[in-house]
Amino acid sequence: MGRRLTAEAIGTFWLVFIGCGSAVLSASIPQLGIGVFGIAFAFGVAVVTAVYAFGHISGCHINPAVTVGLMLSKRFPAHEVPGYIAAQVIGGILGGGLLYLICTGREGFVPGGFASNGYGDHSPAGYSLLAGFCAETVFAFFFLLIILGSTDSRAPQGFAPLTIGLAVALINWAGIPVTNLSLNPARSAGSAVFADAWALQQLWLFWVAPILGGALGGLAYPLIAGNQKKP
Image (cartoon, rainbow, N blue to C red; front, top):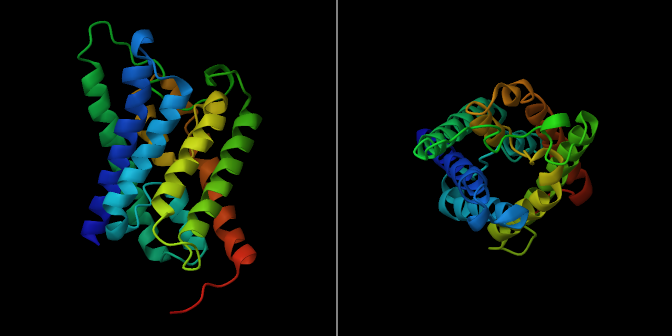
């Protein structure tokens, strides 16, 4: 169990450090800016690399919403959920902390939003709380369907990490303008604790909506796909 929790922490660390780092370090500088496309792609590649590196150890959930969804689909034991979520949050905060330390090495650095998620005045395009809630829930719902479908024993084998990573990039392309896209409570916590105070005040949404969407996806997939064939 200790090795699996360590893998979850490291994987989530990598996701936050690289994904949020692509926004905070690169996209914030005009001459180096990679834009929404680049940030979304960075998150997707971070997930692909993490799944290939740690998937065989822990399953590489690196996301509390994924852990809850897998549990409700009966792919993951309920008694291990708290440990996985704790490891993910710790890894996310450590990743955000190292990113913050690096950022402070630049003169005049101000954390501001620090790649945090937000709604209303803190939405990149000014979307409301309701819009953000709907978007985060639906994105997480489909993300769980994609994870469960691509890892189903009846699906083509060996492509799940690429499919899941591409899904992350695709969802980011659509979701960044709405909330800066969470999809992952641990990712949201990892940046919010180092950002301006509003990020922690709005963090609740980026726990509730992704976990709700993930839970609904975890419940829906077995109804849609039926039972996997037993080996």
